Image (cartoon, rainbow, N blue to C red; front, side, top):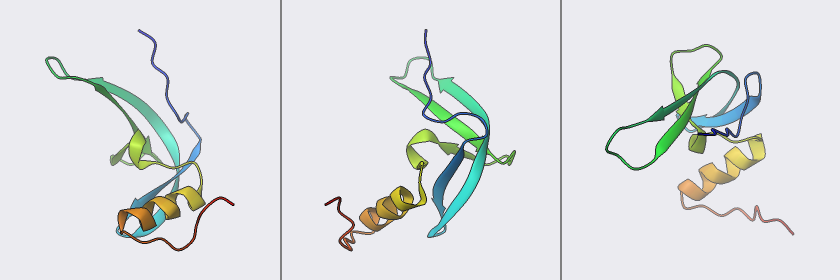
Length: 82
C-alpha cells in the first residue's frame, strides 16, 4: 500500500476555527482506516496540539482558506480567478 499525503511535517497550513483563519505548522501526519468501512482518512496534528485536523479541512494558503470559508457561508465576494 502506498500512502500519499497533501502536507508534510513542518508545512504551514491554514484552517478555519470559530470563523477565523488559523495558521499552524504540521507536527504529525497520521493515517487511519477502519475495518468493514469504505475509505480511509489522513489527518494531522498541528503544532503538537492534541487537536487533529483532517486533510480536507486544511488549505495551503490563507486565500484558499478564506475562499472556502466564504463558500461555506454561501457568500461570493468576487474571489474568482480572472
